[in-house]
Image 1 (cartoon, rainbow, N blue to C red):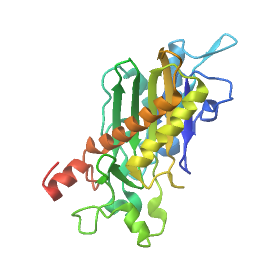
Image 2: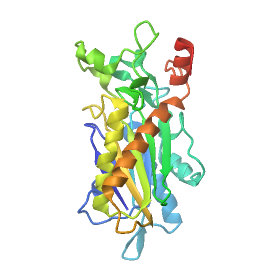
Image 3: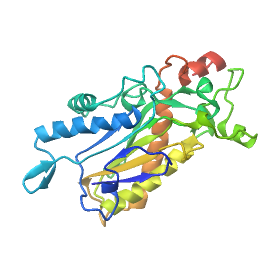
Image 4: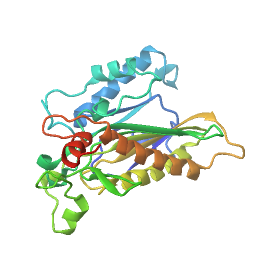
Length: 296
């Protein structure tokens, strides 16, 4: 069971309308997060091909039609823009899927991710893929996976401090995205090419409408850890999934799941930049902190 909530003004998605409550198909077969801007939507076709080979999909008059949703982020300005994910990459990705811990940092959709682009690429830092999950004593599980590719700074909600973002002119600290906006910085082309993509998932049994509420609440975690977020040049998108393998006595509270999902997503976002590795002109948080401030 799945749904979606899009808060950014420049999303790139596949089968997003299908996930909205009220539309007919409720269960999906896969979600794909990819770089490559609109070109990267082709990855979903490779996943569809694999699932068809496995006999998976929505039964349409005896024909199995895999339901594969997805979203892309913009990273074409890193490296060679003619090299981007395609259908074969999507096929290889699903073949490699496993229940092992997810690779974080410069992996998957996080490979070309950058953060803190409010002052342009020359002040930005490396973003990445982050993951986090929690398990309660009663068996409830909630997790998040996120590709962090933002205009704004990444902030640790537990301390209020910037972890990665627009660097200061002297390269010894952070400029502070909101601070430069307050001082008169105006949006221009340097703001373009962003989007944070996230999936939050739970083992709790949820309806499609409840999944939509969880996705909406999970955006709170995005807003807590990225400042500013949900800008017109972002495509900030959150998918919510329910595997339905755990049922609470008296029914599942979507508000509870949503609150935990927001918390997990905020942690995953911070991990996404802390696990990233420096690439080209984009310094990773762990290298910037250690080289400029003496600690990690």
